[in-house]
Amino acid sequence: MKDHNSSPNILSPENDMAQDKQSSTGNRYELNLFEVGKLIVSKRKMVYAIVFPVVFLTALIMFTTPNVYQSKAIILPTGGTDNMRTIKELVGLGGAMNMGKENSSELYPLILQSNLIRDSVLSQEYDITFEGEKLHIIPSEYFGQTDPTRLRKALAGATVIKANKRTGEIYMSVETEYPELSKAILTEYLNQLENYNRHVRKSSARENQRYLEARLKESTAELHKAEEAIRAFREVNSNWASTTNADILNELTRLERDLEIKSSAYLFLQQQLEVAKLNAQKDIPILSILDTPSLPTIKSGPKRVITIFFAGVISFILAVLMIFFTDLWKQVTSGRNRREYETLKEDVTRAFPRTRKILRMIRRNRQHQREHVYTE
Image 1 (cartoon, rainbow, N blue to C red):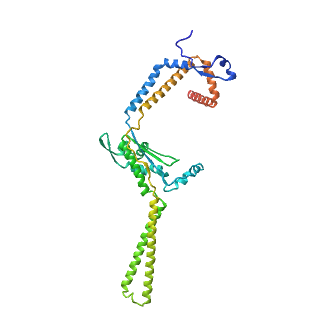
Image 2: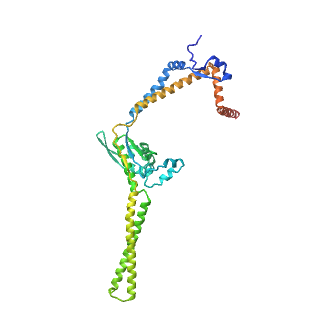
Image 3: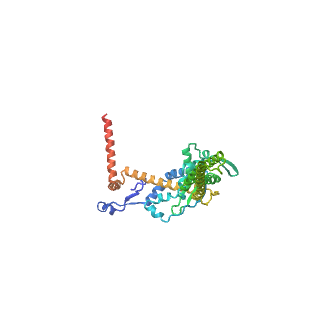
């Protein structure tokens, strides 16, 4: 007579013929879905005990988590495009060659993620309006961090910077609890990038401009010195215009020649400096913004319904697996389906021989430790 209290046989050989041919054709098993369904229904209280608390806790966390708003911006590429870029990347040359373009925007993601830019953004204070209330936001207070490293990580967690390798466009977004704060932080990112391009980022044209400025300063001093020397000489020799003294004439000629050389050098440097200023201005990367930082009006998160749904699905799957393996273990330890268990064990051992060796080694070590303890 069948024992109605026993668990259903959910894992069994496919049929009797397959059971007789195990040695020649190998072992084949089927999962009896009907019996699995009966098992889940019989253990539904366990499913409820696992799924309901998980769903409830997830819903509680989701509905107590404040809404967040995401501001977005798009930066267009500058410095031209490289038609051979894909081939260069394949041979490992693309990155180094493109980085060498000083007026290229390909360095923007790296610059925006630097501590220099982040610290500048975090050093600002933001005045915003949220739900009719004016707020004064200090980043360290908003993120709840005072340590500089953790504060940078908190800002990085709220910021997304992605570059499209094919087109070169840079996508930026900042996500906070306040729409205006998201927009203000993203705007400050772009302001700091523009400031870096104009005042910090080095280029050959700008270095040339700085060199010419220093050289022009020296040339101006030398010119003034030459002018002062000839003025002083003429004051001492008041009759220099009508004199026939050879020494006076020679000295005057030398001073005038020196003044002419210094004047020519000054004019040349002045012209070169003006050209260098124009080149340096052209060499500054232009921050071309396609989409300015937006003011979000719809929350970007958290996605409460989807999160609760997946939490329920995952917890249900885990509950079913727990019921399945618990029942299977009960069947094995109770002696029922012993033959199927031994056959399955042999198949697993044959499929993973190294695992069997490792388990044997672990057992031997444990036995050796026990014997050692007993001996002591």
